[in-house]
Amino acid sequence: MNEVRGNNNEAVFILILVTLCLLLFFFRLGARPLWDVDEGMHATTSKEMIISGDWITTTFNGENFYDKPILHNWFISLSFLIFGFTEFAARLPAAILGLGGVIITYLLGRSMFGPRAGLLAGAVLATNAEYALLSRMVLHDMSLTFFMTTALFLFYAGFQDEGRRKRHFLLGFAALGFAVLAKGPVGVLLPALIIGLFLMWQRRAGFLREMQLGPGIVIFLAVAAPWYILISLKNRDYGWYFFVHNNLMRFLSGRALHHQPFYYYIPALLGGFFPWSCFLPLSILQVFRRPLKEKDQRFLFLFLWFTVVFLFFSAASSKLSTYILPLFPAAALFVGSLWDDLIEALTPGLRKGFLYCFVPLFMIPPLVLLYFWIHPSTYYATKHGINFLAYSYVLFWIGGGALLSFCLAMGKRLRVSFWILAGTVISVFLFVEWSILPTLNATLGTKQLSLKLDRIVPPGEKLVFIKDLQDTALFYTNRRARVLKTPGEVIGFLGSEKRVFCIVEKRLYEQLDEVRKRSYVIEEDGGKLIISNQK
Image (cartoon, rainbow, N blue to C red; front, side, top):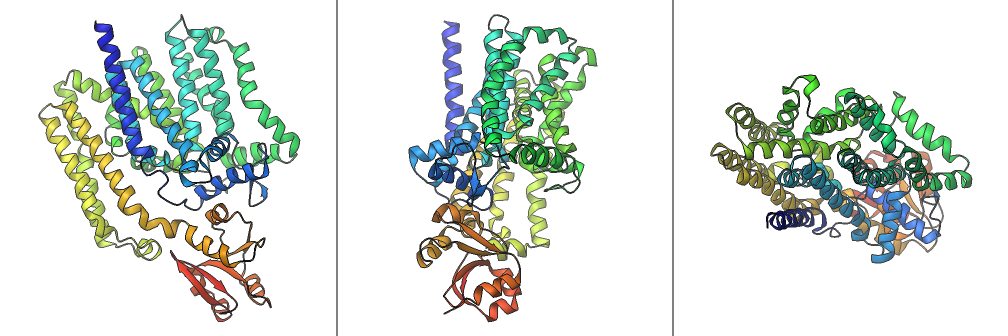
């Protein structure tokens, strides 16, 4: 009877997590047009894959595109084949992988701490700001995060369960192969560092003999190697560009794209993992309460997972906030286990530290409001048409939800406190998706303007842009594009005897006096213009 009840509870827990993900990841998934730059670029490369019939070499704007491995493009292309070339189809793989990551995190939390902790950890992962956002975008990071999380889950399951060890480890090697197809060498390097350090710390280096390394490596190579071999044979410049220039040099070079200081990921993590980042320091601090030799191997594994990813990308020269997404499941498991401990037994010492975690939740909304009141952002107002002060009630909404959650925690109603905070995140996220993000469609995308230009430019001609290519224009028009980089090139283009058109940012256009004298504005949308050499 107890076993049946436990199975029913787990089914309910999974249903709760699936419902959360349906609300956060799938609701209105195709309502927004694609945004420049990344969404338009990756959707276009996948669309060109289908049109060209070449499923080995990705292209963008008709030229080989080597910056990303192939896996996520395959997922998007398969989605396009099923649902057509739509925004929903382009974003669907990220949403599915986001849901999968939440379920894997639940399973790992269940095996480590019990079903309730797994449920809380899955909910934390689903309801933090960055994970929810990236589960709705056309980006490759979600593929890496899902397969890396799966590989680490399978390792830990095999480490704990001797009876099914072989199966878990072999499936884990397959997951590592997919992680390499998703993002390159980091897909195997990071999990290998985490697992290796874990076994060394446990003084279990001999355990490697039980990890099916021989057949596992064969499975790993069978998954990961064929595409890399085929694209390298087909394109002799691929190997040097991707492995040396795009991976090694971006990691080491001080002139790398997206260069940021070492501490960049501290605020990136605190903001991206919000609101649960407020509880993360306390949950990690719990790991260090015991002497080094007595560390609980569950927390040790999570701590190494979190730390290796954080320090690895902090050491890299090229940094983007999305790069550390693979540590979010570990962070969610830390926070989920903390709340589970609090629900189980709220000790006086832990209770005091826990209540202090709410302080940032109270302070951040009024501080943000004060900042925008003292320093109103003219940039966002002019470029995106957003006045942040007009949406100040959202900050009060967040603060009110945090206050209610705090009051319930004070009254030791921890279960309700957790779900009030999670519900606040969900309601704010849905409100932003429904009411605020649509105002950004014109400024962050080029759908309407590119469709307008597609109707007036003769068939077969390239779309022309000044200085910056708007990637979504290629997705929506099926055309190639040309970019004019200098004022001289623009003036020469406008000097054509036939009527020509191009797209330019309004702010840039106003700075180019000679261009303005030789052109006419045909259409304006979202801070971008279609201009022509004739009225």
